[in-house]
Amino acid sequence: MGVEVKQSSKKSYPSERVKTGIELLSQQIWCWGRDILRVDGNWLIDLGFEVIYPPVEMERVKNIYMYQISEFQRIMLRGFGVFFTDDRYGSIFVPRYEFIPKFAPVNGFNILPWGVDDVHEFNTPNAVEKEYCTTMLGELIDWIITYEEDTLAILGLDYRLDVLDLWHNGKRRVFSPQDSISEWIQIRKDIEKILNFQDSSISH
Image (tube, rainbow, N blue to C red; front, top):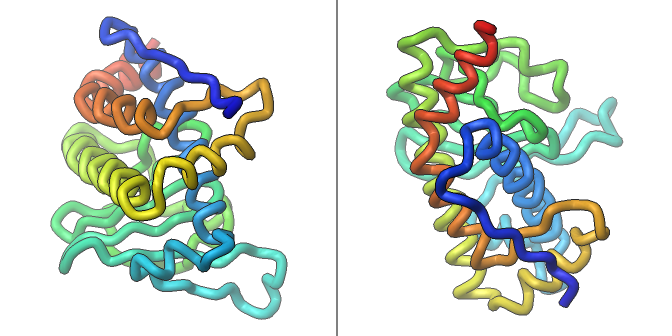
């Protein structure tokens, strides 16, 4: 295996945690893409994801994958980021290369997010909305952790290592399956600090 394992520091600054969050999310989106293309069948469909196909005039656009986590929570996967909705709070969009969530006080979409131009409903949260973002980002990370744990338990470590071999190009930071879970757990603990740091960096 050529997977490069990176260890995080528990004393790292929030800006470094944001960078790690971006790297983790980008790798995770890659893994979801490979799970869709799994030789033995689409793993996301096996788990109960709903596939939303693009209109005929968008033939080159990728399908949307949506999963109903609970009666009031659902997740939507795109190559450019992840959408998480909790009917009690609203929705967040976590951009792949930014990680800091944007907020929308809506539970549904006027326009499905086929591309980045379709996320104009999502904006930088205010103080109250930031609390909702903190809660929902934590719930999203909890779901990702469970997803990876279940994938390892059912499909096996070798399967995920093979996926990460394809992701490893000698330039990207690559997290081993076990380390990605531990890194997500650490990010989960640091969410409030990360979002507060983002506010202070914008104000300066």
